[in-house]
Amino acid sequence: MDFFETDDLDEKYELVCRMDVEEEVTDSMIDNMAASLDVVINDGTIDNRIEELKRCLRTKKKYESVRLRRG
Image 1 (cartoon, rainbow, N blue to C red):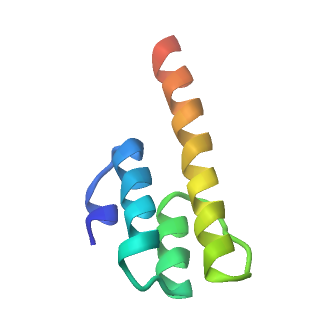
Image 2 (spheres, rainbow, N blue to C red):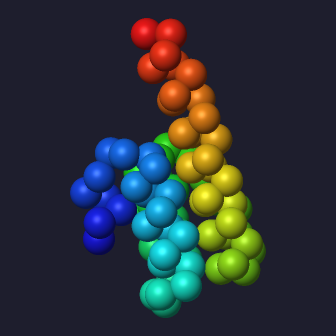
Image 3 (cartoon, rainbow, N blue to C red):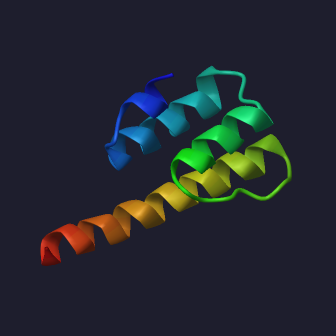
């Protein structure tokens, strides 16, 4: 899965957005993606969990860009 092959958060976000529409997403897939980001996505519907994963990615992108600008 491309999600695990890239370190770029923008690319990860785009992949999750495309998966939402193009692929059958399972709880296990969401759990594995979340673990790779060091976050936990609470139980719920697949749609809610995907949205939570997207939110986590947006937040990480925001703070990573701030950290890189300071560094």
